[in-house]
Amino acid sequence: MERKNIATCALLLIIAAVASSLFFSRSGRSPKINLNPYQALGAVAAEETSKLLGDRGEIVIVINDPGGERDSVLDAQLDTFTRSLKKLGKFAVAAIERVKMDAMTRMATGGTMPPDQFTAVRAKHPRADAFVLFIGFPMLPPNELDTLKAGKTKLIVISAALPGYRELVSAGVIQLAIVPKPATAKEETAEPKNLRDWFAQEYQIVTPATADRLRF
Image 1 (cartoon, rainbow, N blue to C red):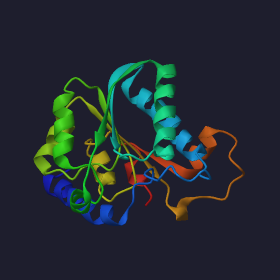
Image 2 (image 1 turned 135 degrees about the vertical axis):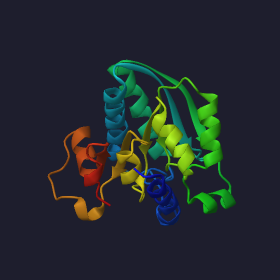
Image 3 (image 1 turned 180 degrees about the horizontal axis):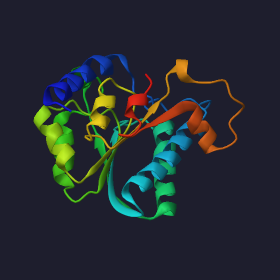
Image 4 (image 1 turned 90 degrees about the vertical axis):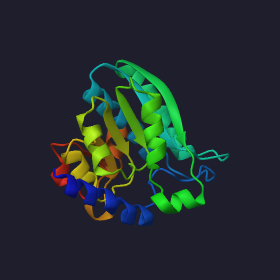
């Protein structure tokens, strides 16, 4: 993928992120939230992470800091993700890094991870085998995207489907993305019976081999 195209994709994230609220950042106040889709997301994300890394690895999880409010949706994802990983191999969660953003930063990034915080997290965990971002991928300049592509650390992104993801996955910058299916792509199916059913109903897995089939 040409550097110019990667830069264009990164800039497109700005436009899309402003209009897209990250699909997992709902408040945990409502007791009526159906947590099955989010538990399914965590479980399948763990399975796909295990497939990507093999049966072992050091993982750093990055989340959008909910602040003083508890986020039951995020809790459901993280709990299922970490519990599932323990069953799948010798994985160690080295840290859960929280991304803090004020109103101005959110406006500037559209809610995606600020580039400076991403750089700081990478520097803090140079031996990590994978970074799992439960937040939109940061808007980075072409030279940093090239560095990520050449590195050994895997990048796994679990967020809203933003323009640019298809190109970033195809280019090998992001090795795995899990994003929601658009409403138009959801099919009328029977009531889900298990977590895999819930996942198949709500989300899609994007890898370099399947990036061209990503549906927005």
